[in-house]
Amino acid sequence: MGENMRKITVTPYNNGWSRQFQIEALKLNEIFKSEILEIYHIGSTSVPGLSAKPIIDIMPVVHEITRMDKYNEKMISIGYTPKGENGIKGRRYFQKGGDNRTHHVHIYEKGCKEIERHLAFRDYLRVNPEDAKRYGDLKEKLAMMYPFDVDSYITGKNRLALEIEKKALRWYENGGNLHD
Image 1 (cartoon, rainbow, N blue to C red):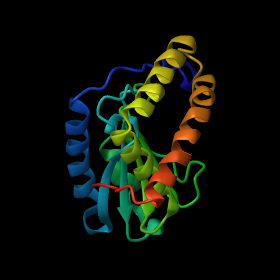
Image 2 (image 1 turned 90 degrees about the horizontal axis):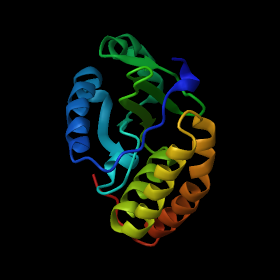
Image 3 (image 1 turned 135 degrees about the horizontal axis):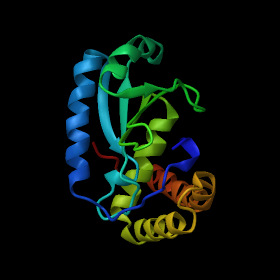
């Protein structure tokens, strides 16, 4: 099965996701050691109660992004495929699990705006269950409508995701708290 034949599966929230994050975070800390300042569980699997594709999104924040490329071999040794920036400037992106994707690692340098965007989105959804439910329901519906069409799935969820993201950034700028 090629890239475009991966089946899109959205499942109800699973309590095991945060444990899977912790296990993987330990492995990443072993590899990157003092390069990592913080490591966050982000994305839909980090929001209790939110339906999601069961892929753990991990965001390490590092001192210097350019130093990350020398860790590609070590990441390959624990099952990751290095993807470079993969469309987002200043990021290093890794995927694990091939067609049965299990983890995505998004590495950013301290101070990068993307970090705040990811944390605001996650923390806003954690305290706004009605928006989380709207988002989860939409993803479930899209996964049923487009089980093998990842582009239509992504296009379908992007409008609501961007709307929530705008709200989340406003919420954060008005004093909403970001958490570890």
